[in-house]
Every structure is written in structure tokens, then in C-alpha cells.
Amino acid sequence: MILQSLNILNYRNIREASLEFSPKLNCFVGLNGQGKTNVLDAIYLLSFTKSAYTSQDSLNITHGEEMAMVQGSYITPPQPSPQGRESSDASHIASLEGRSGGVITISCGLRRGVKKQFRKDKKDYPRLIDHIGLIPLVMVCPADHQLIEEGSDERRRFMDVVIGQRNRKYLDCLATYNALLKQRNALLKQYADAPTPPDDLLEVLEWQMIEPAEYIFCARTEFFKEFEPYFQEVYKVISGSAEVPALRYISQLQDRELREAYIRTRQRDLILGWTSQGPHKDDLDMRLGDYPLKQVGSQGQQRTFVLAMKLAQALYLADSTGEAPILLLDDIFDRLDSERVERIVAMVQGEQFGQIFITDTDRQHLTDIIQPGPDAKIFHVENGVIQ
Image (cartoon, rainbow, N blue to C red; front, side):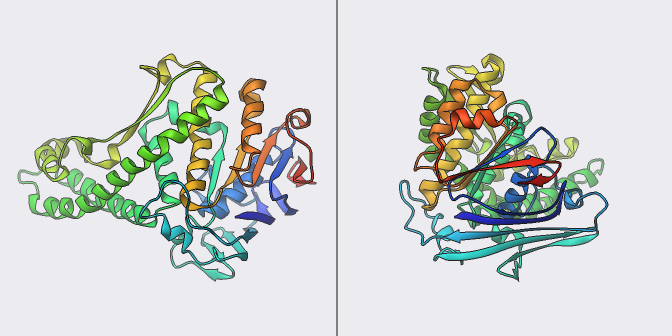
């Protein structure tokens, strides 16, 4: 999938822009706070139906305006069968309408106080979730450090974003499970001090939760078995060292039956007021050698670790869907030493990666590192104006 053109109206600080892109490399240069990241966020919006930075759509509308619009035209080449590791769920991506070749238009309209309008070729989606996976995309940005520093929610979100772009059933199971989990937690809080808790109601919910929970667990287990070699290889390339990273999936379901766990912990859950068992407690163990990355990794090692996860995500999606995802690299030059940056840029300019969008504050970085040619475009961004 290639983003051919992008039209923006009143999105954050970009009042109006009409851009034509290179099918390979596109660079946005400008000082901090000028709007470079907002361009990438608009591209992200068209893939995931939401901003990468806020869940409140109204915050994406330019201050003082009532509406915003983002529209992209994509070239969709005919798709081959997924290569590399096969998955029983990968086929749904290839079968999505719009993958047979040609041009499709994706648009998102935002208006204050009104539900956002998301369309493909002027046709509204019945559900926004139906769009996820049509335009595979991976974003690398400064906020990625939260994968290490924040709680397990961030690491589960990483799994969900990767798996969800190639497995529609996974997204449906995740939505079902989260809705049921919310109901169970509400009951636990409601009856926390009741002399006789509603075991019958809790049991009905638990029975419904088991099937989607087990599917989520199986999908995550399969994903990490397939993902690990990509991660190891990418880390080796961009680190240029003999460090041995480790990324392990941790789940309660690896050593227990969920139905029995619900029954065994029900009284404790009533005291806590929330559900203590299930895939919503899954996590990733990130290590260098035998030690936790957060404790022993330098800043450079931690950034390299997270970058390897994100770039491996792009390669994994390319092999499992048969299509290289769009890659967004936001402000990576100032956070890594020059040697690592050169290795990263050399890697992503290879045939394994698809269309790339990069932001930076210094054009000299781009001139020194990026190979010049007809497949590269550089845009200057100043105060929301893009040239």
C-alpha cells in the first residue's frame, strides 16, 4: 500500500495542506513544534481511525475551528499470497475489499460534538474496527519508551496493534472480552460488601469470557513464536554488538485453566473490586542477557531494544500479510548515536521495507545519511505550513 497523496484541513496546527509523496522515502524537516509530527499523526489516523497521541477527537481540530478533515489516496497493488510464516488468520487481510489493485480513498471527518465520520471511497464503515488492517502501518516515535517505563498496558497494546492488523477475529475477541471484563468488574464493585455475592451472575459472565480469552492467549502465543526471530535479527543489525536481547510473553493462562482460576479467586476479586485473572494481565518480559532491560540497559540499549521491536513488527507484517506496511519514523536522529542511525536508515531503505516517512529538525542529518535519488522527497515544515 502506497500513500500517493494527502489532504489536510484544520488538523492540529495544519490549517491546509495538499501533499504528493514519493513511493519510497519522504522526509519532513523543521524545528520542534512546527507540525512535522502532526503530518505523521494524520497518516496514522487514516490507518487506525484514531490519533496516535489522544483519544479525544476534538483535540485534533485546529483551535478556533469547528471541523477537520484528513483524506488520503492509496495505490493498492495486486496482493500475492502471504509469504514466510503462514497463519490461519492472515487470509482475512488479503481478502479485504480494495486489495485487488487500483486506487482507494480514505477520509476522516471530525466535528466538535459529533461522532467522527470515517469513509472508504465515500462509503461509511459500519464499524471502525472493520477498517483496521486495510492499510498496515508501523510508527516509531519518542513515546515508544513507555514500552519499557510504563505498566503492562503499554506492552499489551503493542501486541494488540501488531496482531490486530492481520487478524480480524483477534480484534473481535478482544472487544468482546473487554466488554465482559468491564461488566464483571462493575459487579465486583457493586457487591463488594454484600453478604451474598451474585455467584450466578458472575458465573454467566465468566463462561462467556473464557472463549475469547483463550483465543487471545493462543493468538499472542503464536505471534511471539513467529515474532522472536525477526526481533533478534533486527536488534543484531542495528546494535552492531554481541548483546543478547530476550523478549518473552508472560500470561497466567500458561499454567492454569481460566474457569477454575475465576472460581478460586472470586472472593478475593470481590475484595479487590476488579478481576485478577485473565489475558488483561498479560505482559512482556524484556531482558538483556539474564537481566531486566529496565534495570541494566543503558539509554542507548533501551532505545535500540524498542526500535528493534518496532522495525521487527514491520518485517513481520510484511511477511505475514504479503505487503510491507507504511513506516513512520518520528524524531529518531536525536535519540541515537550516528552509527546506529545510519544502520537503521540503511536497513529501512532496503527492499524489505515499503514507503517511509521521516521527521527531523536538521536537514543536514538527512543529507549526510539518506541516499539521494528520485525516490526521495524532502518537505520543509514551519508553523503548520508544508512546502
